[in-house]
Figure 1 (cartoon, helix red, strand yellow):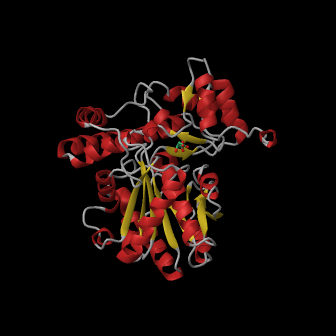
Figure 2: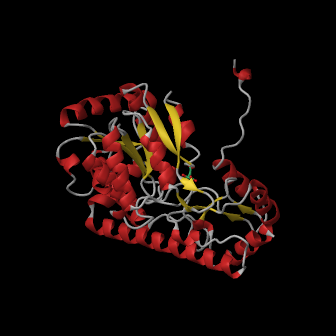
Figure 3: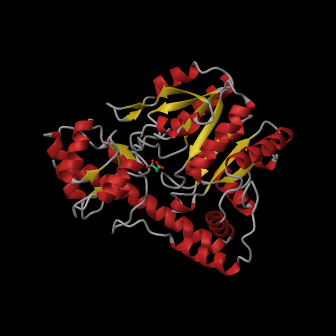
Amino acid sequence: MFETLEPLPPDAILGMMALYRADPDPRKIDLSVGVYQDEEGRTPILESVKRAERAVFENEDTKTYVAIAGNAAFNRGVEGLLFGDAHPAVADGRVVTLQTPGGSGALCVAAHLIRRARPEARVHISEPSWPNHIPLLTLSGLEIATYPYYDQRAHRVDFERMVDAVEKIPAGDLLLLHACCHNPCGADLTRDQWQTLAELCERRGIVPFIDLAYQGFAEGLDEDAYGVRLMSERMPEVVVVSSCSKNFGLYRERVGSVSIVAANAESAKGVASHAANVARGIYSMPPDHGAAIVARILGDAELRALWEREVAEIRTRLNALRRLLADKLAERSTPVDFSFIANERGMFSFLGLDRERVVALRERFHIYMIESSRINVAGIRPANVDYIADAIAAVLE
Ligand code: LMR
């Protein structure tokens, strides 16, 4: 039977991570996978996580199952992060949150739940989007469509074209939006644009489906949840998926969440029951460890303050690295104006290079990025930025 399965091409992102790891050249630089790196090129464990982890180890007294929906304290803590302290949707009992295995697990549960609730619904995804959005969501059988989002020439959100496309989305379909730090382009929606989209979704009966994988990396923890909170105030139904991989640095622990805002508390009961049934059918229960760490951080004033400072440091550093690279490229008078890199947010920007130049950067200079020319700015360091800028200038000659 299995001889029918031909090998597939490597994953666009994780395949590049593997190529980088296999490269023995000491000059190699990893701008590929969306993982934070510090000044030494390491992906450190946050101090708040280390302390919380010690407390978890000391206090845990069983390894029995937790629950299908995961850790209740984690779910409450994450709802606070996503929706704020006193969001009416939460107060009215309209929000159902489940801990999931990473943001990918959250997308998967959401997709199956949507398919169960409305099999004909399509999910409209930004062009471009995270390369795994479509493969992951279509596994449930959901149909996907795309809407224009990023103007590659002007390096900005093409909001007029986006709105034109959203105007044509039929009622009951879902609009997948990146809450902040758009992956892969780093160009985010402004508050005015969120307002426009909220009006549009309301008028057309479109259900917002918001992916928040980088909360705290753009403007701040509350600021980055603006779209989530606005949509959940205005709309009867919203789907929110989030990840603790980046802002807690818990990548390999697989911690995320899915929150469904239902039209009313009665409907939320049906959502909770079906979401649990979907999760049970896919993975039964999420892993405990990472969520126990997050729950401890969010439930302890001191640890939480430490974590918030650590997230702020990462955010400040990412923005400084953006400025640094843009300045270094400007010094080299490249034919392309790269000043947009400094204005974008989060880990990613598109350099706007064609595939041939991306391959040249990899093969001649050992600089790894996704073939779309998406870079992870966290891989830039004061010690390698001149080398990177020289290499980009060289392939543009
Ligand atoms: C990325 O976009 O690089 C990250 O979200 C890692 C992944 O799973 O693709």
